[in-house]
Image (cartoon, rainbow, N blue to C red; front, top):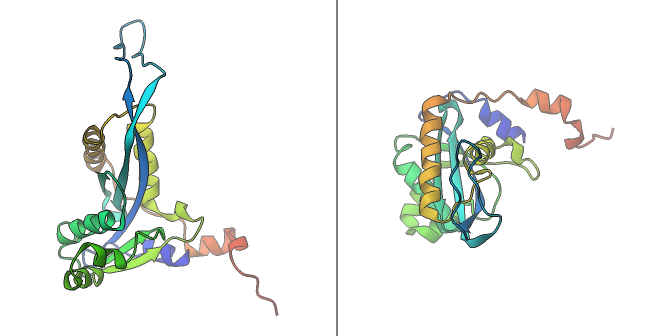
Length: 209
């Protein structure tokens, strides 16, 4: 936990940017009946029945101090999918960074080895050397700013709606990210190591004299 909190204290530096990432699955749902459009007397009406139309995976990347986020949608979330997304960021937005400080959870897909499953060894090594991993602890996903961004996106873009195919989902989520990037400032993390040591004492081992 303290490792992540210390990472969030670092100043904005294009040579060593802090990047948070998280992911979540989403169920694609297809309407079985044509919805009734909204009118002056009632809201849009949707039948309670629906048809499952597969799943998709949403990858959220956020650079807190810049107030920037990128959301990607893929049919699945394998090690290769994750490595491809990371490579795209390392070679575009962070192409000039010396090392990207990556905050993420400790899933078996978020590893250096994932790059070796996706790319030739020489290329994988070059990418890995430009990453510094900072894993959130178990039951500590609240420390990941990207998870907070996912929660906001779900409330603002997905809640109460049915999306039937991956292309439509991708289009709507990318529109949300573009609008949010234009309107939102950076995230300044307030919870510090000192706060953790004072308020979360139960998480620290007891020293017996």
